[in-house]
Image 1 (tube, helix red, strand yellow):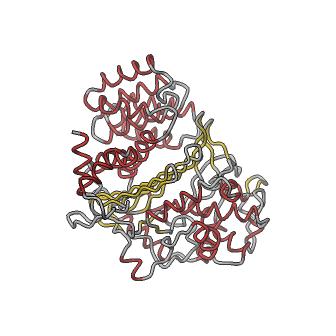
Image 2 (cartoon, helix red, strand yellow; image 1 turned 90 degrees about the vertical axis):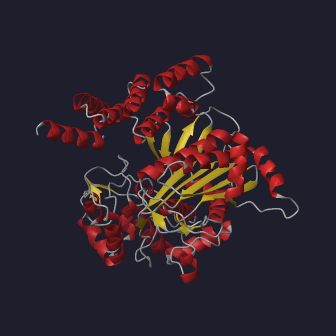
Image 3 (cartoon, one colour; image 1 turned 180 degrees about the horizontal axis):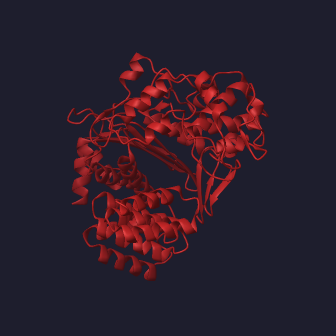
Length: 505
């Protein structure tokens, strides 16, 4: 059955790999069956497209000095228009990694210092950009620890509303924003903690880095991208503002209900350093190769671990950095109104993975993340396999048998699977929850708590499971436990307040 499925997928899906004119479809299909990279791509793509919220997927892999690109599904539902090598996707916050690369270039060029006070690069009085005498430094911007707001003024206020039209309202606010409005808002900000002590994701901060880079080089941000990244990597199809022909190749974006979403407003009125780039899969592969070049001093600088969030999680020059006994790998997610992209580089494996879809929102992001995890699990040349994937199918059929299988594998093959990463079971629990299998999710989250009793997030997840099951007493108990273990867990605080409000009604 598996080989038949792969053959069917090969026939109906568009492949980015060049088709040899001397081979027929049967011969090419046989090659696909024998190539573990393409088998993994097809298998994970098939699982992705089972979810009703998504219709299109592009996968790019660079491994063993070879490039693999394949496209699946259709951009617009029932239109029969699959993505291809010329399709442009909004890569959103993947843009930040290119901004980080430019910052690394500036540090090596002596234009910036990680310990510089950012006010050195601002005109006017910004006494507000410090807390208890501690200013925001360049490294705080790069690691999202500057204690700045997450977005431009007006965006966070909209986020508190639960309306289907929010994406269009976001786009409207962004489209009207100007540099004058940006700097006026920067003067209004009041920091609430010492910079460098707390991770708080900030698009506003990333855009500030765009301004700082323009100031130091006296060149536009777009010019810097072209000079220091695009030309060196050979990227010819990655743009911020698109002309008419390029815009015709930009994939329409949708939410998980199938509603068409707006693109990020063009022309870009700020710097675009936080998430305004659009790119094709072949260009993402070129960027991947650029980031895997160990001889490139700028790449090495951009991968430097600047801020440690957890024991094995760091932040570099806007890169998320995970480190385990197999080595460090660098990754970022980009999400837009109607787009999701994951980008990974694994120097230890000399491999990179990019997956993208034209559907926005958390559900598509979660399913797409599973594709990336599946590809890594299939293709990495050594190390532990994912325990989540190993027991997933059994858990979906019978969660009790799945949990028994977990304990069996842990006893019989403790070094073969990743039992040390709490996120493994957490992801599985949320997959079950997303599919409406609430009782099963609670059992997996209960196992997660038992395996990691001193960690805060497992209790938070179990609290959510019980909340979805309307067992507010146990939900409250677990959120409180999570908050004890991590007093800065804002989600737990919010959920405790929400449950208390439900209880008083």
